Length: 92
Ligand SMILES: [Zn+2]
Image (cartoon, rainbow, N blue to C red; front, side, top):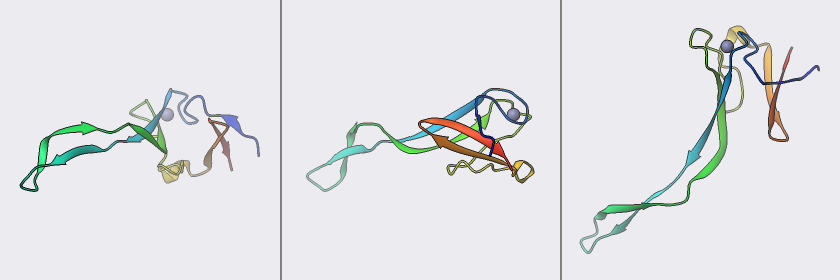
């Protein structure tokens, strides 16, 4: 296995973006009549430890799903993994 840092699109060499999915909760106090109040507050935003990568070149279409699997079957030989916070890829 000859893994390389995933620092650009393996297909078109354009920039890649890692879309890190975040989650937060909107909290509504319940009113006297049992309805949630319109006023709300957001709880802390926290990462879901989930994300996907896509190529910034719209004509390229290289992207992964949240399991870092390449979505386009034409690029199925490219395998992406994460190690120590960085992304790498290899071709198989
Ligand atoms: Zn690309």
